[in-house]
Image (cartoon, rainbow, N blue to C red; front, side):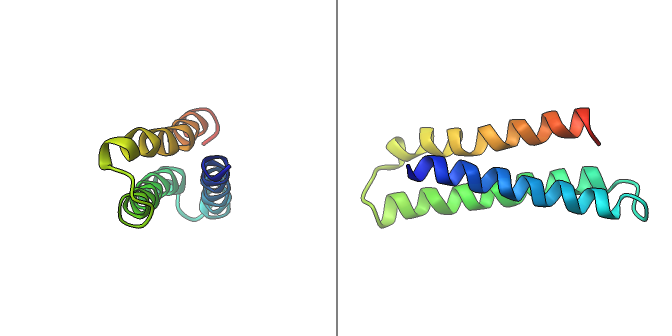
Length: 88
């Protein structure tokens, strides 16, 4: 359940990023590239924080948390790259 909510959060953050890109694209032509890059960096930081919480607070090992972090990062990140390629 927590993994699904975390991925949903990633898609919501992605939607906000692309809405901001569309709003600023008239004044800043590379807004789509900046928004996608900012999303990828911010999402990596958030999934890294989730890894830290899983290791330090929940008691999982790094080896147990790394595949989860990869999955949590990869799903919205791939969607961001595909949407950037197709839409912006």
